[in-house]
Image (cartoon, rainbow, N blue to C red):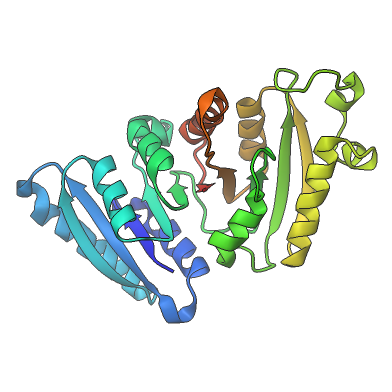
Length: 275
């Protein structure tokens, strides 16, 4: 498994090291560290930063190849991710104290999530080195399912030690015509019991996670999608939030990508975007 880590600051290295150790087998503890700079005069400082990061990773038994490239940060990282055929891109962000992490790098995050050829792990400012509790936001709009893509692309996250909460947000705006009002107010167990479309989606995801011996908790929230995901993520003690990147075209793709960008902009925990 090939992992590319785009470094802006060493402040996220503890969390990054944890995720790398979790994802990589013992025989493959090697990553690539990348730093983009605006001019050649900054190369030496960038190499010093990477050397510091590499030394910290080495203490955890992780070897690192170091690369510095001159150019726009988003373009540099995307180009390396594509040409290097990486399986995962990890990005850490800096922020002023008390300010939302990704507001300062929103354009870079949007570019990476939209154009990276692989999953993107966005390590937030308020990240704890733990993934015992994972929030998986499955809209059920793509096949294979989000869980199937997660298992295929990053199987190291599903080792049976974590609990995954499967969240589905029911919004009156996006609800199909003719859905009874009772369903729009029902909880997860009720939707599964009456075999509602959302209930079938949750039941499918539960059964998929059981194959990996992962404890699954279905949950339904009612309201606007982004606000409900943020409320659940902020109050649930999650170490990781998993969302999907959306292929396709037209207004539906634009809408779904906009939702993903809003989630990335406002959440300060670590977010994994699966392709």
